Length: 405
Image: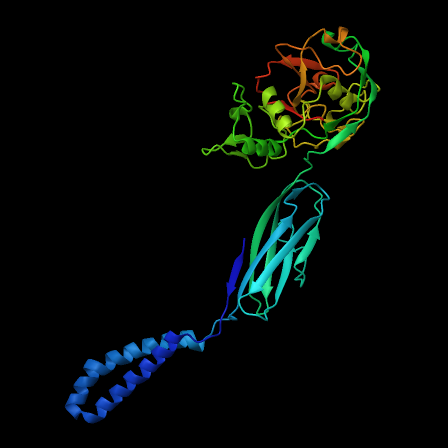
């Protein structure tokens, strides 16, 4: 993106030509006036002198407009642009803004001033420096406004948008060891309460977002695995398919968790990143820690700590919107917002036969496990031990996923 400022004090060539033509015409009229007799002069003045005087007067006005009232211009052209690094980031990310400007002629000077959110209030005065930094403490789109000014007080402004989000592919390390899995207070498929040992692993700090998933789609350039399994249902997601088979997101939904994604779509994304889906046991340990708590934050229901049906509006929230509801390991949104696909096949009585070390679920089945509750569910379904299964080809408005390694 760039801008050009043009200014000049120079007299144009066409103005000089008009002025010389004006002098010649008037001089020719005066000469003919002296050579002609009285009657002929009278006729000549009517036929020739008056039209020429009118025409020459118009030429004179044009000449005076161009030459007598010069524009406030300098003869230099200013070419300017600016870049933002990184192009997206989270609260307190240090963004670097680098403006560049040059003149078509040497010797010019440019000043810069910045408005970080295009709110009508300039956040800096005019500066000599073209490099500045800034941090944002709120989320969403930010429009940066830059004004440049030359030494003749001519100025231009232009804008650029950046997106502030906490969404990232950051992974949280979950240490090896035992934890309490299941619940005696929940449904029958949560029983019996039992101890499970897991090796250490990594799990995504956040659910996968629309912004991240659209990167995957635009990379693989398809919405299926070639085996009859569709990744996304575009009728129920903020991601849409263009006519040229590229994909885009409805503005404002970039950092919401992707929904409408099948288990196959979740698995394909994870493998594209060299990752995988977490096992059911890994997911539950990440959510409740080692003490068997009911929700990631403890045993007392707190609707302000997650996105459930108790929270309005009834739709997903950007990932990381509930920092007070993180798990003991610092993993976000493991209660509510969206259900999350995990790797395991679902079996209602699996806990009664599962191994005590690194369980990976039944070998086969007709349903895949979903965990964590969602924005359409009450508090009971947002418990860390709640589990249910659905067909892996299913697409729902409240089902997403996160990755593990």
